[in-house]
Length: 155
Image (cartoon, rainbow, N blue to C red; front, side):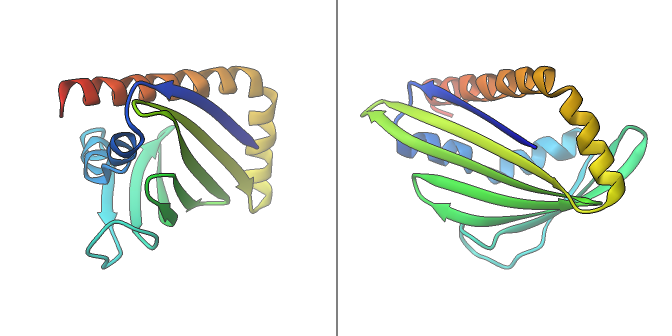
């Protein structure tokens, strides 16, 4: 099951990429929401091979997820692979400079079930694909707006 969205932002591509790759902020945000997040690689700088392990509560049950950065092509693309009980995920954020101060951000995410119960879950999600896609595109638009806001505030 695949989701995709794209948004244009009034931010130079290099600045947009830096804001998208602010992984420390993502870690702190997840921890504020109750997740346990741990970086598991030994890299000293950002790049392919970065890994995280996280545990969080969802629908009353603890879930574990492992995430690995598989591609880090500054300032054009970031790809991650995730794995949780029965579902593998592949995410890609691609940036294209439209002008000196304008960038198109394309965000794709694909879920692949790896066992029967996960197949049933993904199949049930497909029944709600229209509403899930609408919510996904709304979240990407909100994220793009936050990138613009951070850029304008100089944060």
